[in-house]
Image (cartoon, rainbow, N blue to C red; front, side, top):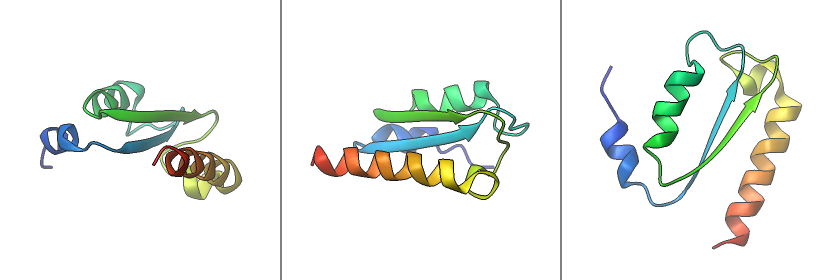
Length: 76
């Protein structure tokens, strides 16, 4: 896999990083590395959810996504 971290450092915009705490692939350590590359990360970890929060917990995912989008729109 390519290392996209250098490109992430160039982004100057709000970024939602939404994960589940039962994700065996994107662990908390991996998510920490990802968010540390972003200038304006908004990190959310959903309890009891694995690698696909949008499919495993769509209502909670949508609530967090809408809150993020509303906040981002308000700061523009």
